[in-house]
Length: 113
Image (cartoon, rainbow, N blue to C red):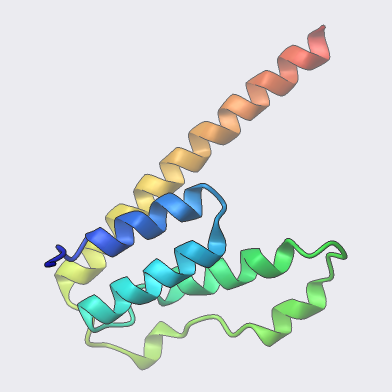
């Protein structure tokens, strides 16, 4: 079965938006393998970070064990790859911003009651 290059990233984005970080990480890895680049390094890093944040005793010390991706080491990103990643990131940012505004409005309604 042939998948388009967006298939795995779309599934990963869905799982991430549903806070299913194990599944999201799996599909980001598959998307990265399909495209043959480190395009989804940050997404994978975020999944790992979110999974660790879910532990019952939240402790910031675990952040030292996760290395953030360093993009300066890799300069061969194509313009297409960067535009695609930017577009996906922008879409998720807009989605989360709208959710935050909705949550704020709901909170304000509850406070007024």
